[in-house]
Length: 196
Ligand code: HEM
Image: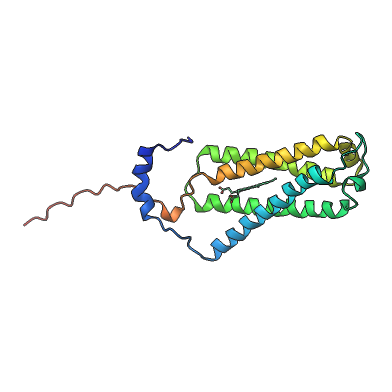
């Protein structure tokens, strides 16, 4: 279970912390995971930051309810934003899945709440991806959703924020590398005294 460590618990862990390396072990896998992490965060910045900019800067203040003229809303750049949305979604999804699989493989078993929060994050992210794609799209469904432009854009933004918040919480879980795990004490039977 998730527990908040008290002062006493921290003191118990001090000797273990002292044994850990203070710099990362840099190898091919480290660089690969770092690149995946950077891609994940860059994708998140583009998708969530883009929605924020569109909502609070680009959206015309006098946009009438039901006005679905996409080019007016996107300042004439709907196609470019649709491409950015697709690219950012692919970056987040591919890098996120790679990171999740590798993190699980390389670390000691995470608490069940880690996976539960990851499930919620994937659900929130899926909602954000679908809404972002619809808001930037050119289908009849996209036009219908743009009739309530402001509300759906805010919902999409909130789902993105939830994904960011859950990702940050997941990061705070102890990540104990398998190689660093301290072996449990072993019982060794005393050897029989040799006959003289
Ligand atoms: C709107 C979508 C998403 C956003 C905005 C988002 C954002 C974030 C952020 C800000 C972090 C913390 C990064 C760090 O501190 O290093 C994170 C971590 C992470 N995300 Fe996402 N994410 C999204 C979707 C996804 C999806 C769909 C997956 C998986 C399929 C995923 C998997 C992960 C993993 C594995 C981590 C690392 C957790 C850990 O350190 O234990 N994310 N995400």
